[in-house]
Structures are given as structure tokens and as C-alpha cells.
Length: 154
Image (cartoon, rainbow, N blue to C red; front, side):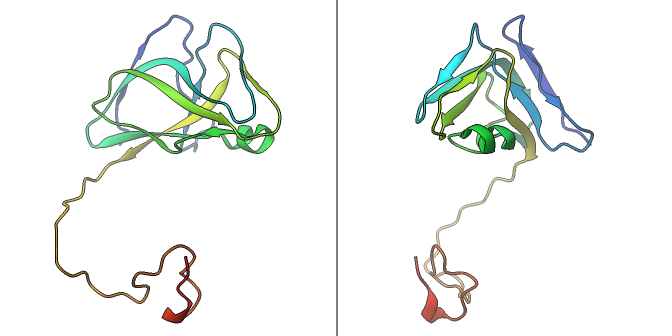
């Protein structure tokens, strides 16, 4: 079953989210701008979409980068994936960063990110005195797939 997502246009010129293929997981989000926006290398900006939405309880919206913009221009979502909670009703903004070496121009209506609607599970956090043992134990970054406990590195 497809979860309902109610969308409210905050401006007349809004481009609604759209799946670009029959099997796409993400619907494209477009920039809602009065004119072109230039992001210099290293610049970060919250880019308006002109949309507010009501996502069904039990779901979230995940704002993710578009792979083509990331590989070709270095444009990505700073907090990927950004989360839109089901109780948020403000404008959806995409937090973009230019990680490339050249300025990137974003045009009004340009597809800038993807929106994936996903189920949410809230954990039941419980304080305990001891945790169960595992093979990995407290091995941190880069510690998996390297053999025994003597190879636990960070």
C-alpha cells in the first residue's frame, strides 16, 4: 500500500514531486526560486521547494542527493539523508552543499534532490548494566571483516 502524502503548494510556480521511472524509489524535488542561485565551492544553502506536506503517521520523508548532480558537479545534500517527520508542516527545504571545484548554478524548477518515503520504527530505549557479548565487541570504525579481535582498529 502506498502511504498518502498530502502536499500544499506555497507558491504558484511549484514543481510537484515526481517519480521519473516506474520503479523509482525517490521522487524528485525541484528548487522553487525567483531566479538562478549560484553556489560557490564550499557554499551551503537551504533551497526552497515551495512545498509543505503531511506525511502519514508511521512514515518519514528522506531527502537524498541526486546522483547525477553529485558525480557531475559535486552538489549534494549536507545532512543526507535529511528527515521530514510526519508531524512537520513547514516548507520543505533542501540543504545543499557544493563540494565541487567550480561554481554550480541552480535554476528555478531544477531537480535538486530526491524524496524517499520510508516507514519509521521508534525504539524502546532501556538502560542496562551489561550488554550481550558479540564477536565484534567494541571494535569501531574499520574493525569488521578483518579477522579476530586483535585486529580491532578505529
